[in-house]
Amino acid sequence: MIALVVATHGQFSREIVKSAEMIFGEQENVAIITFKPGEGLNDLQNKYQKAIGELDTQDGVLFLVDLFGGSPFNAAANLISQEENMDIITGVNLPMLIECFTQRGGSKLEALVDTISQTAVNGVKSLKKTLQQSEDEEDL
Image (tube, rainbow, N blue to C red; front, side, top):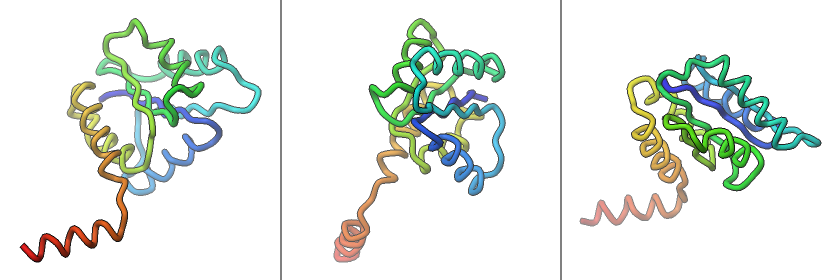
């Protein structure tokens, strides 16, 4: 099972994992990393190294972070730059995390990255545009 490290500014990582587990069920092999005011890249890298040491990383490690170029991303990028079976996806959201929980047990890292990246994009919808598309399809 691919190990997950969910890392964000503030408590968002903790809360999004709790929300996903409320829907999908409690998860194993997941680390939650919070980036608090006053901390720097070294603090995050130390948290990441500790988390990776406690996770089963045999099938790979996927970092889900909030912002491309933010501190959680930068610290992870520094850590995994020379690693083969690790990757980072930015823009963590609830549909992505639930899909990740669903797929990570039977997927290779690259396939998981592709799947949940698409899920994240597909999870952003406008009600009015969705209703209009449904009406247009019915007219066909």
